[in-house]
Length: 107
Length: 114
Image (cartoon, rainbow over all chains, first blue to last red):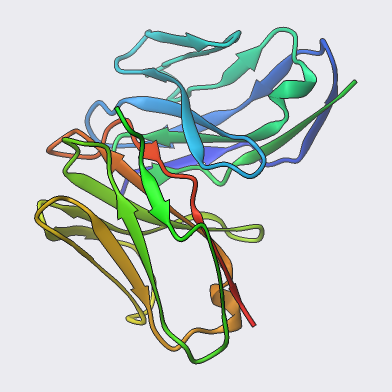
C-alpha cells in the first residue's frame, strides 16, 4: 500500500541555519505530495504541495521538489527563524502521512 | 470561507465513559477524515467518510466509530474509554471525490481520560 517515510527528529537548529527534512514515499500511480506544518497548539496546515514529477512546491521560504526517480520529496529552507519551530509532516494523496519531524529553532 | 471547526476543543472524561466529538467541514467538502495524534505514535488515521459512507478505515478497535450526516458534518464516538485514548483528535476535510487530496485540518479536540 501507499506509505511515507520521513526523517525522524527531533531536529534542533540555530537561527539562520539550513534545514532539510527527508521524505520518501511508496505509491502506485502518480500521487500528489504534500508538506504540512503544525505549530504548537494548532492543527495541521498545508505548507506546500506538488502534483507531478519535477514540480517544485514553495511557500514561506520552504521548497520541495517532486523527484519520481528517487521517490522523494525533501523539504528545505535556507535560513530558518525561531517562528519555524513546529512539527512537519510529509504526506501523499489519500491518507498516508509520515510520522512527523519536530523542528526547534533557537535564537 | 469558514475553516474546519471541531467541538468541543477540550474534554476530560474518566475511564469507562464514552465521548462524542464533532467536526464541521469546509462548505462544499464531502470527504471528512479523522486522526488521532499522540506524542508516542504520531498521527494515526482513524477513518474517512465520503457522502455519508465510510470509505477507508484505519487499524483501531471497534470502540472507535464514526458517522457522517447529509450535510457532511461528521461525528466520532469512542466508547468504554481507556487511559491510552488520551490524545488530540484531528478532523480534516477535502474536496477531492476519488481520494482525499489537499486536506484542511481543524484545530483538534484535546481528550484527556482520567
